[in-house]
Length: 637
Image 1 (cartoon, rainbow, N blue to C red):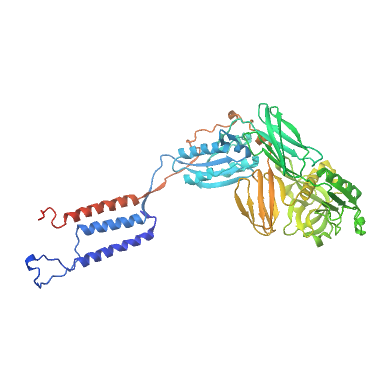
Image 2 (image 1 turned 60 degrees about the horizontal axis):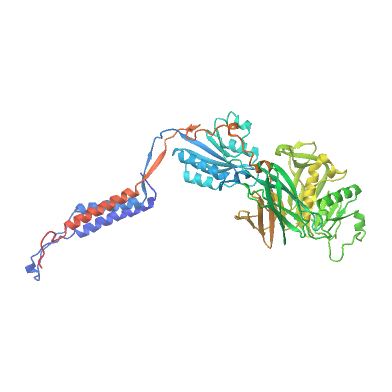
């Protein structure tokens, strides 16, 4: 026997009080006298009781009081029961990729997977234990092994799809994490790789539950806003259905909205021209025609509305000046690029005229640093030690064989050999956008480097926003097709420097890092909010797993982050796998693996004790009524 609230047993101290009441009441005996001598003084000795005498009323009251105290203390019986069969360990694994959010008949594929999981929980034996694992970019344990059905159901109900394509490595990690002698119920809408289905360890335990059906979907694959008042924009839209469709489109910028449509053949794409736009700013393209998946119906881009922006390229090398000028014009055709040698600026005059009160949009300095240039942003490539005086970046020695970490085939990072570089060390509040290593070896795996060193950093200094690229770009490095990773990193950096500080456009799944010395508030596209606190480098960061608009509220400013999603495999909802290609889900009631049982259960006694106390009250009331004087005798009127 056990007690839920043992401290309430202190109320049993009322039993000695009941005994004292009875002792006091029986210390003197009541005597009956004749009514004719009512007013006459009678002197008679009444003996005192010398021992405690009880009757039925005392034992009824003691039993009633004891029952009430035990009920108040939460008494229960604990016993061990033998199960009819062995208990099962079951791991529920959920795919949270973007296609699991596809709507079918008013509910998503993930909702249908949850319903199947709830049926498994309802049919399971009381002793069966479950755990919940979800995966997309990585595997994540959502609920540890437990027999608490309510807690497991709440964990499953809280799952939500994200706007990324699930990684095969994340699926394998989720299945490996299940581990132990457990059955694995996998809920997904995509074919499981044959290597996993034929795995001798996983195959006997893996039960795949295919959810979803063929569905029509349209997606925006790309958005080029064009040049304001100069060139039209271009929108790439894909039709993933098996029939011809006319798709409605809407392109909007501040103070301007364009509506158009396109008829796209089945399983093909169309290029839709619009504009040119009359205003610059954030461009939002949207598919207005209803379809199954909403995550790929919106796309964001930015175009500068102001004309006559200038960029300055400064380098002692003529070939570097030419390469950087071409890249800048390709990044933003509206830029007027000026290329000069450092000596021309250090001579005390400016070889360009921007007009009164104007400044450069961007200045790019290679292997030099010139002070006093009025610019909105600075890009320093292969920096000199003079940079340390003006920017929070330390510049060290030169290495002859620098390597840059780039994405390789199959999602594995590779280290690409570039050439000479200066070792840099970013200070607090400076974001590292790309890293690498100081060594040699073309195509070296990323894990082979002894330690990662910063190669591309971005931050804010006293003179405004700045970026530093550690490696040298001589010998047409940025135009070398075998080193395209260096060009991509440089182009992305230029786009960041030319865009407004209060706007960031990223792809879903990317990590967003912002400098901040204090906590900030993050508002996600689904309306949920959270607080982000800075790390040791005075940076706040979050992963954009949902498509749409994020708002970061910093002290004194606000930053908007627009996350774009598109993945051809996930958006193709018509590519539903055949069930015959997968192992059958099997009977959910027959455990593949089990463990010995002998469950321990508890039986609360509060209700029984209260009923017992009520019955004793009724019995005591009957006895008192029976003892009432004059009961059953006629009364004189």
